[in-house]
Length: 173
Image (cartoon, rainbow, N blue to C red; front, side, top):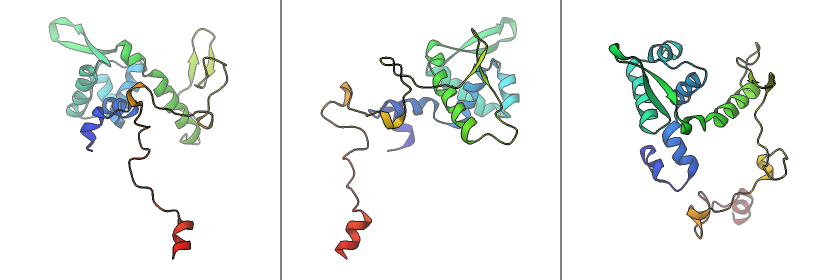
């Protein structure tokens, strides 16, 4: 399968990556979440070529993540605003930022702190079970086929032949 075809996969992650799955797109979204909404300002912040930035913005508008809003009618200038679909990406960006803060921050510390405006406290994103309110860890979750995959199994399971383990291979030799 080619990268351009992942939006056809029966996989929510693959379909999401077909929209936001490159580094420049995620950085453009980061800037918009930080309040940088005008083409020139985004270009200056990211040091992107106009062509590359135009391409990313056009795709985000086409996919319904951003909308163009005129801010200078007579000069045809636009800024880019998040749609509801775009705002729904914030937990992913905040979680990726928290991962970067933990594993990639330099000696100077984290570059940005997230602050919950109503109470004024710094936060680190956490996944919480809506039923029992416990923190969710990958070790505590199990994936099962949803309605789109009933009777087919999960992606990545059972489609490729399994390799023999080293232990089995050595015994056979």
